[in-house]
Image (cartoon, helix red, strand yellow):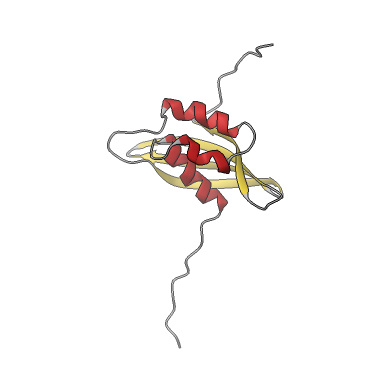
Length: 122
């Protein structure tokens, strides 16, 4: 018998995007690195989040500890990730949608709970 080789699973879009978003929100990559990976208002949301540097830490580098998702319809994923840095945990949620070109793009991102209500400027 030939020796067994370990099975290496290729990361799916949920893993890939969790790592990309973590890199931006921790200051490891510039926010404009997400331009081609976002659609709709997601880029603007990401810019606002990244300005505050919510996942920047001293000491332990943040990592994705756990990830899960729900598929509300074909071509859409609601994703959550637990981000750890040392003994601190944060929650990150994002939505991915698959375009006609079959590429996945982030269409929404939230970190650590619901957004503050903003009054309508009209």
